[in-house]
Each structure stands twice: as C-alpha cells, then as structure tokens.
Length: 367
Image (cartoon, rainbow, N blue to C red):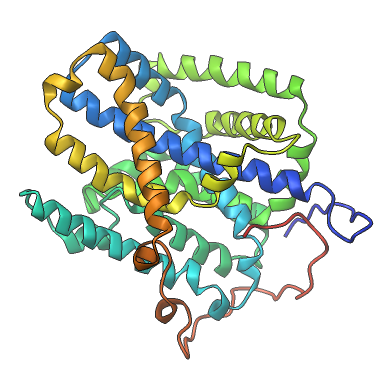
C-alpha cells in the first residue's frame, strides 16, 4: 500500500493535519447538502411542474452529479483508512453498526409510509438489494468490508479493478436491471473506486491537496464546468460512465475546499461535516411529508421553484442536527453497543500477506 507522509512538527504532529481535517469537513458538509438539495428539487419539480427556474436548478444538479457522491465517498474512504488496519472487532461500528442503521431507517421509513396511507412494495427485498434512498448506508458498510478484506493486495490493482464496473456502466446497468430490477447496486459501482482510493491512498490525496494553489483551482474549475456542460449537452453520453469527468470534478472540489480552509474552515462546515449521516437519513421522511401534503399550486410558481429546494434543504439539516442532540433519539444515528461490541465475533482476518502493525506519522484519519 502506498504511503505519503508529512514530516512531523516540533510537537510530533504531522504538518498539514489541521487543514486536512478542515477541508474534509467542508467537502462532507457541502456534499450532503447538495444531495438533499437535489432530492428536494426533484420533489418540487414533480409537484410544481416545469419552469425556467426549475430547468436552471435541475441543470445545476446535473452539472454537479459527477462530483456529488464520488467526492463524498473519497473522503469517507480517507476517514476509514486507519480503521481498515484494525481488527474486525474494533471496527464493527463501520460494519454491523452501519447495517443496523440501514435496516432501522428503512423499517422506520416503511412504517412512516404506511401511516401516510401509501402501500409498500417488497420491503424485505428492498433491504436486501438496496432498493431505497438509504443505499448509501449499505454502501458504506459494504465498501469498508471490501477495503479491509483486500487491504494487503496491491492498492493500485484493487482500485483499478474497482474502476472497471464504472467504465462499463451501460453493461452493469443492464445486468443488474435484468437480475435485480430497481436495485441501486449500480450506484455503488460508480462510487466504490473512490472509496477505495481514499482508503488506500489517503496520504497521497491529502499531500497533493495541500499543494493546490488558487491557479490550480481556477484551472480545474474552468475545466470541470466546460467538460461538464459538454457532457450534459451530448445526448449520446446519457447512461454512459462519467468516471473521467468525476476525477476532474473531484480534483476541483478538493482544491476549492483547500483554498477556502487555508485560514480555517467555516464553523458551520466543521459542525455539519461531522454530522452528515443524520442529515442524509432524515431527508427522506421530510421529503415524503412535502410530497404528500404540499399543495401543487404552492409549488407551481417560479418564486417557489427557486425558494423551496433551498428552504427544504435548510429544514432537513436543522431538524436532523436538532434530533441528533436528543439523547432519546441517539439510537437513530449511532448504533447501540450490542451491534458494535459483541462478546465474540469471528471474521476472516485478511486475504493476502500481513502488513506491519506500525504506521508512520501521517495525516489524521478522522474522528
């Protein structure tokens, strides 16, 4: 596995640690808000119909599609990089704990849906084959297991193999569509390579990011927007892989985040960036309420097309962060001890040769 370490300062901490944490928080916070904003836009578009304002907002959402989830999974992999070296019993919050949250939220959402008078369609199949918006939790657990099992294989080879399903997106879509209709495993295939790259090449990504300049950011931004617009306006690109475009956009996103956090990240980004999971899981009940009770006439004006996606995003974030602070609701956002600290659990140790147990001083891997 490749390591890129920072020299330690006079206190023994790796130089660049502070900025690294802050730009990651900004990336996570921005990514999850973009996800909620996109889903809120879709709900308002369904309710209120088309308009020039809605077209512009949907165009923006499409433009940032290649970066929205890939960059989130990349930094998630970076934050998991030290955990993949620890014993299985010490990382159950990322496996059984994450699956607990996944199943819990799907069941809660299913119950909420029934209360609102809607019918359920194969709920257990939806859980098993990731057929809901909660596929992100499923992916986080699955990606971590894959990264841990393959951690002693050549990192570049593992990431290269993970890229293949992304590049073969039309074929992968066709296969999954035929075998498991409605599954979001296809979304996972677009993102696993980014998680593995973050997990295995954490220090490389962090080291290169710290060298980014304003000129790099401007150049990458221009390239991202131009290539993104070309992709959006090329009909034959629909349904094809946008992996290379994602790489460019991710580089721009990280570079921009680094510039913004040179003198410290905004306080909101630090707070939200450390609490992205509550925001992601809480969006679906809120969006279901909006789609069920917001009158179409209210959502139909241009002003509402512009305001409601932003307003809903803010409401989701505020409610989620408030709920996260309530002790009685902790089980919704943090897996209980019985799922992460069992008395005994046997798992395969690794596939391949064993890595040295010690690690050089490097960038902090997260909280």
